[in-house]
Length: 201
Figure 1 (cartoon, rainbow, N blue to C red):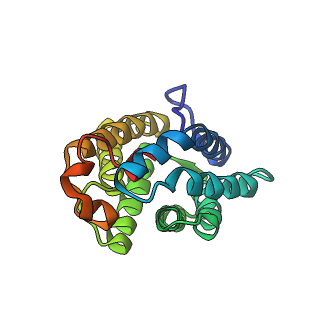
Figure 2: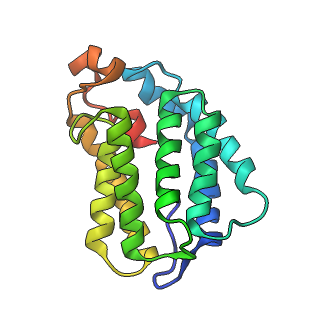
């Protein structure tokens, strides 16, 4: 999600939707980069599959603004998990759905609720993906996002900005980790030196 611009502003459903739509555009722009990262340790199809999945998210959110922040996440997650032709897209979509259910009825996100959002997402990815911290996966980025959001405190925008910084740091940290799961686990040390594609996404 592209970073919020004003501290103290409310992260309501309309602003969260706008951020998600911005993320859809960012994924399109990063197609080649994600494909190259995935090719180093995976099947090389992550960029294309996420472009397909995020196009579905964009269509889902293009109409009316959902009634609350949880509904934005639930609708986006449903669209992604149904449309992305990859395990990663399905896993991320289901994590969004988990967060949407946890935040149902919340008209706007506070700093604490941003932390909760990432905590719920991380728990869902860890459970369904059967992964843990330090295994060079998207979980490492999600946990770093959660921790930065929690440490930042304050309003929802401050927490989201901190979470974005955490995601970048978490993704970059995977470059020094030895892959342990999926196809990257077979390659082992050959995948080190570049960030994990899923964490980067």
